[in-house]
Image (cartoon, rainbow, N blue to C red; front, side):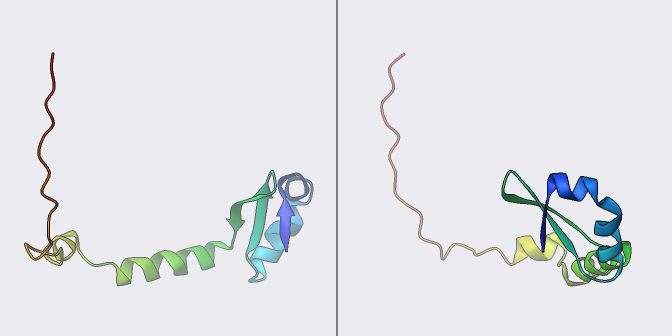
Length: 81
């Protein structure tokens, strides 16, 4: 179910209760998805999972493709001041 922002404000207790029961609640604003309300436990689980699978910044940089990438040969244009 997707709640409109107005309905979610009017029935916030129901939104929170559903999230605590394990069903994340989607809220839209002006007909577009805006936020998801989920329990603190679910949020912490997602956060821990993201941290566990994240590589270090050094590993990220070292994995960057090297000189095998073909670069475009571009000449600077003439500029008059």
